[in-house]
Structure formats: C-alpha cells, structure tokens
Length: 289
Length: 267
Image 1 (spheres, each protein chain N blue to C red):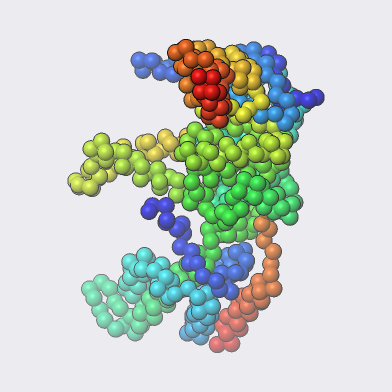
Image 2: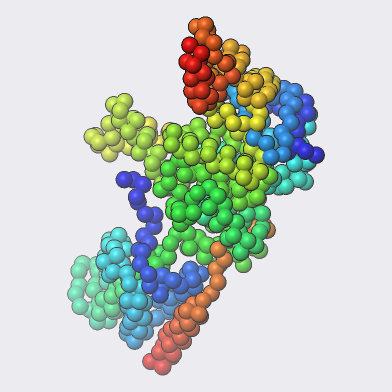
C-alpha cells in the first residue's frame, strides 16, 4: 500500500459533560463525521481548521490514542482498532504535542530522547547511537546534558521531535507544535520539520492554524465541524479566500495582499503564496506599466 | 531566578566518592547506619567517626555543607539529649532536680545518642551531597527490583520520582506566574496574621492544582504516544556497570563491618 494513513468513513463520537445553571448535562458530540483522508508515504500534509473543528481528534486517531467509533483507519497498513498492533502503530506514527513542557518526561535532555526507544526495549548501545544521531538531526547536540527546564520553548519542542525520531517512525504527526512558541522558536521548529521530511523522507502531518507554515506542503486539508471541507495543493486552497474565511481561517499574508489588490482592480495573480512570488509579480506589473 | 534552584542538595565536585556507583553508595550508607546502632563503646565509636571523617575528606565536600544538615535537626538533638539525661536511671547521682535525677549514666547515654544522631545525619546527607537525584532514583529502582516479586512497584516508584523531579521547576515557574497574576489584580500575600496569609494562598493553590492535573493528563497521553507501557520489557540507555573502584569501595565497606565486630568482640 502506498498510503501511510488511510481513513474510510471515519466517525468519532464522544460524550461531553457541561454545566448549565448548576445542572450537569451530557450530550454526544460527533467530532469526526465520515472522514476519508489518504496520506501518501513520504508526503508533507498540512491539516487546517479552527478550534474545535476536529483536527486534533484526527491527529490522536493516527496515534491510536483514540479509536474510531465507526469506519476504519489504517496506519502503515495496521487497523487502529486492532489492539494487537497498538505498539506497532505508535512506533510507526510518532506524535508531537502542542505544549513542550507537558511531553518531556526525563530530567536530562538525552534521557528524555532515550525514553521512547527504552520503552521499545532496544539494546542500550543502539539507543545511545540513535540518541546521538537524532539530537544532531534536530541541531540540539550541544544541549544533551541540559535540564529541559533550562531550554527555550522552541528548543524543548525540537527535543520532543528528537524523542519521536529516536523511535525511527515512518510518520510524524505534529499537533500545533508551534502554537506556544515565539517567532524565532517557530521558525526553528518548522525548518526542522521540513528538513526531516525532505531529507529523511518521513511522512509529516502538520496540524496548525498558522497559514504560512503550510505553504510548502504537498497537500492541504481543511477540516470544519468534523468533515473534510477542502482538500488540494496549497495553491488550489489559498486562492479561495472567501471560502476559507467562512471556515474561520485566514490565508497567508501575501495571498491576502494579492486578494485585496485584485479587488482594487490591479491585475496580479491570485495564487501568490510566498513573499518572493509577490516580489516578482509586482516587478512584472511594473515592467508592463 | 526561580529557575536556577537546584533540587536536592547535590554538591558538584569531582571526587572518588562522587564517581562511585549510586547502588553501592546506597548500600554502604545503609550498612553504616545499621552499624551505628550496633556500636556501643568508646572504641567502636571512635573508629566509626574516624572512618566517616576519612570518607568526608575523600568526598571533597566542604564541612560547611555537611554541617547544614545538622542545623535543621538541632532542636531534635537537644531534646534527645535532655530526655536521655533526665530519664536514664543510674547509681551515680550527680544532681537532683525535683522529680528528676541526673545521673552519670544519663549523661553518658545522652552523649552517645547525640553523637549517634549526628553521625546518622552526616552519613546520609553525604549520600545526597555526592549523588545526583537522578542517580539516586536509578539506584533505588535497581535495588528495589528484587522486591518486585512481593509487590514493591520498583519501576513505578522510580518513574514517579523522575517525573516529580522533572516538574518541580515547571510548577515553581507556574506558581510564580500565578502569584504575579493575582498580585496584578490586587491580591495581598504580605500582610495579615497567620490565618489571613493561609487564606490568601487559596487563590494560588486552586489554579496551580487545576493546571497540575491538566499537565498530568497531557503527560500521560504523551507517554502513551511514545509507547510507554510500564516497566516490563523496558531497557535503559545508561546501564550502571560496577567499575574497579566500586569493587575496592565494596571491600572497604566489608572491612569496616569486620573491624567493628572484631573490636566489639575483643573489647
């Protein structure tokens, strides 16, 4: 199978409790409704959606932290509902969470990176090799003896990525990994992710609400109210500015500028995604005048 | 600033004692403490003190740091001394004080107890001064492993200690933030009596607990995502291997025990 992740009519329901006027009520909530998503091996997929759209729920499904109520999800060929394969699934699809503080277990960087392989029961000498090489891959070798509490948010998030990489997964799912970081840390983390996808060929599923991070993705999937609302290349998705806005999403800054310029009657391509493209489009415009 | 606190009282310096295997240090401390309760006469006392002094010298930890531990239990030491002096019955009466009589035996007993207590504290703080909390955790996990059969959760205890150590700085940071946030809204933690101060802690503790539970929930999920399934079939990257010096140290510990008992038998 050429697919890393494949979902068929995936549904996920959960019961949520809430309080109204000191009264506890429960209701079943359909977080994912008939989701069909295919993610090819080695690709870089971005999943967009506003808060509560179901995008994080889908991420947790890939790691078998939750399993479908109806429908099926295959990860690396394993059915996530089959308990027997749960460790194989979690080993082949690693997950990085939003809050860097709440996913680091050990008190020393290298010990934390070793946590995953230790759980898999790998030989100590092999763990040592892996830890050294993944710390190099995320550019954190110099910090291997540090306490995580002494690192910045971006550095901690790169350690979390290294911790997942040390399990040698085929796929990494990142659930809003940059949401709590400053711009500098965000840049470091995104660059690391992109490089790993390019150089190591690891399938990457990036869940985010920063549009600029998704521009280089192979495919963008928009989830709204538990259903796949849009699917396509970034260029195909981001030209539909009005539709994206109706889902409570933004477009990359330069795309928005192009959109507004076109509204003003200036003849500029609608599918501009990067500042470089914008510069060349504006320059061409100038040469015509 | 709050980030720079060191957990435990580890004193960082390179010494033969620091380099010893944590398991060996734990056992040695345990053996030494047991011996402290067995010794009874001037010869064994002086021998134990001499050995402890030699170990302290080898550890390169300044005496100031070692004495710090005694300071914190100073009141207990004084109380022990007073109780022993007043309650021990004997024949050589030195002084009579109402219902109590101070005897020569009482004074001897008090001196022995105080010295014993001080040595107890010094030897155990020497362990924590020369071993990092992480090494201690690993050592405890290893030493408790044989007791797993009778239901001692050795891996779980070690994992809990690790997570606690990992989250102390994080939660301290958080406490600091919550305090500042409450102060910005006019909370007052400084004035008032004891009750008032205790009450003013509630607005700090409630958010802190809520956030700690949320963190615990997320951490549990992150650990599961990284294939954590308890201590079975788990390996460790850093395995503890006994070095040549560890064997020498082991011989020293055995020699110490033999000497103590020989002295006790001969004298």
